[in-house]
Length: 216
Image 1 (spheres, rainbow, N blue to C red):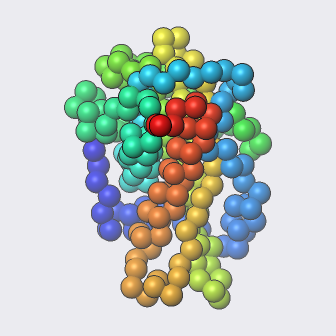
Image 2: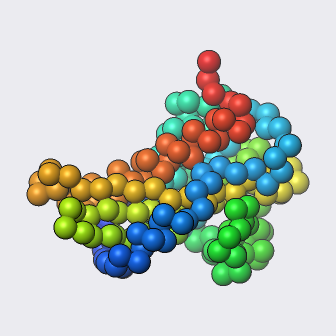
């Protein structure tokens, strides 16, 4: 699995960050559904799951790792580790292309292109799990003011149930981390990772609540 380093994170940040107050307004109005079932009446039976990074970008890989860790520690699901996923999928993480047709107000979006379903099904066949949870950090933005800076992350994703290859849940959320007086001693990477950790924790919280799979 691709490791996150200060240099690679900074390159990612420079690529994705737009320094503008406009994003503060966007963040305030963004959909925040960390784990949203497609069918609200569906019940989930704790079984096996693999959290898949939607690409080899550092933010996606890191987010998948944090969600995997949270589910492993807190859920009664049998969670495949990222190391085990790498072992079974030699080319992991691979690019799962995000659809450009998702509407801005869609709370139950299917994020991957239909043509990517075959690739996901092939992954599941090797991983042999009941659920694939593919996840991306779709955007990274920075808002600055006289009081400091705030880094926003925008996780998206889908959980697919097998057999049947049916999308049963969607993720579309926003989280942030703001600089403090310690910012003089911390790089931007610290706040980006902190925002991703918060996002993962919120996804896991909602997952546990919806699937009723919290460890006793």
